[in-house]
Image (cartoon, rainbow, N blue to C red; front, side, top):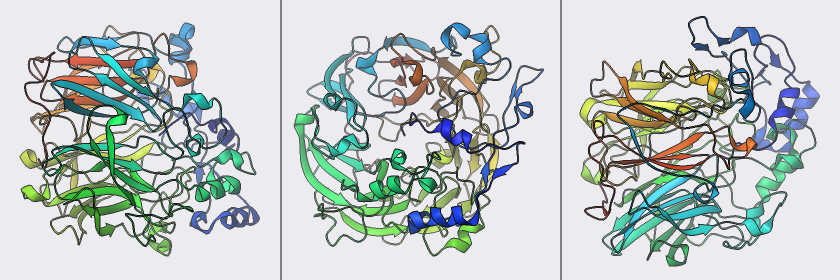
Length: 601
């Protein structure tokens, strides 16, 4: 999500309290007023937002480590200085570390900096396709997008740049307006791209979801959240964009080569999801993040198909998302098979929701942000899908009958608020070891929240998953001017370990995570009883063209070409190409030996 919505300072102001465990309360009239905004954001529990953390309760320790706050309110915008932190160590650069840290076994093959290689400084998605012997990378975040020719790793070229930049400064949802490269309500949604034998080419499925921040500036109070912004909630409900997904055949690497095959709504109330009524607003969230489709028959999307799916604490988002599964036997005619959610997510299930200790904290993301993580396709004998459910924890679903999804195992995880909990599941090692790796990611700067562990979960018995370890916390090298990455400025913690859409097969025993200000971290998990950090590359937390307001997410993505053994690291200052002979093998810096055509793997 775009983490630069300017609401955090005001949010901090309304959380004036003392002590790490104090909470903000509101009168009965104030709570009734918030509930009257919209029945789908009525307060299930009383307002229990965490207070500002006591400055004496966290910070640098005598041994050079950092003690995190135990509990904080979501605050994505502000720096949080602490003694011995970035503002003291790097005053000339505003508290952000300009140094680079690299282990000897990681090589930087190339760096492409600046705005030409940075469609968004906070977040982006990637895909790779091959046409006519050339390899292309797509990098995009809705209406800001780039297409690169990456055939020669050391000579990457921009072949297309898309934006809505001609609109200038527009208050509100500028995607409702037609721009230079986009029609009104159109953009580049998070995509899976797979080869289709039926169509003799690549098929791209794009998610179309509502923005993850309501237009709170239309609110009536300075609270800057859905609970105090009836105008913003009403505007979000009234948006007429598609909520669902689109299916395209790609006839080339540029947008002009897209051929639309289907427009599909995830709104359960639509009479015909393949011919959605666009004359008014659709219900629910639309399809979130990258759909899970490997080119076979079945596709899974993260979605809330109704406004009733609304038991959500996150202050600027309206929905709690579960899953839909679609039959993609013909990608031009998707057919809905089943919908699943965990009890407590939907209006009418408030009793189950109240049992969650996060109820009322106005901070936690509740429900999925990504589709199911699936180790083996159903067509290849796969049976299980792993669901990262935010504050609802981890669920394991039996997907062997796609028309009848059912939960076979569940795990509640330790609370880690603020920040996003249970967001990513790496399942690349599951079939070999029975282990999966579950993590959330940080939202605050300067480690102003609990640390986001990567939990190693033994799912050998899917009915009884259990935490058996945590991956090691990255630490700077001994000669660094910092002893803990919290001192570098920006966020610190895991984001994700790449995407299942990467070309080639993930390597047994190796996980590669982007870690915000700790860059790329290479974890050796070949021995599940002794996971270790085997390599790393942490670039500067900003570049010459990085604006001051864009430094909170130094590294926000990693995308691995396992076939060419190249790691692409996406930062607020462009793209790095990394290799490691010892960890990944000898890289191929030229054209791939074979085009990326894997489907139903």
